[in-house]
Image 1: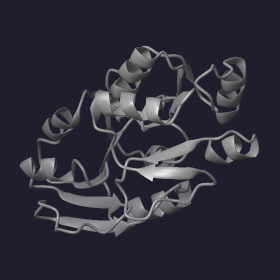
Image 2: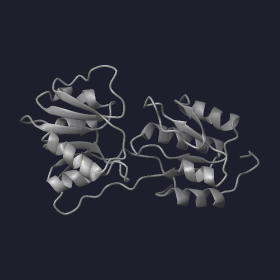
Image 3: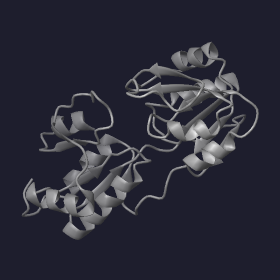
Length: 236
């Protein structure tokens, strides 16, 4: 998205959440961190003469999406979401759908298993409530403090991943179940294909409730939307 925006000569700021130590460089000016809630984002939109907002956050970053929706509504700034289409089960898939992290933890009750916990670092310690399992954790950055899981193995890697690599990873650690969010898109889809190829069940966390706003699935659609909603007197 950032590359296409830059190629089209649009003035834009790329906002990072600040969750990883070394985010990928982008061909746009950028900022890092939160805005200070809805009021802070309202102030930012006004101070920087923002004319369009593209919500390209992770599908599970619900709080940021709601903040953007409320701020844009108050400022009368057009808002568009660039959303990854959710993954869909295919014939033969064994998916257990849960509504949230708590549901995923509860779903792991039972005998010990080797679990691929593909959730990032924010929620991993919640699974200490199911200490009987051996967890394989794939993280972008090495954890600053050891995870609270008594039996775990950390793999430090940054996506996108490929099916062959994820298949090999699952086989190396004798994975018996995958736990992940329905993030959708292609960047993290390899684990879904690998689990399917190996016949592994998946505990899949469904997406949270998101605000009502127009959505598109490709960066090209974003550019067309921006062009169809020209800037007002606020400037670009």
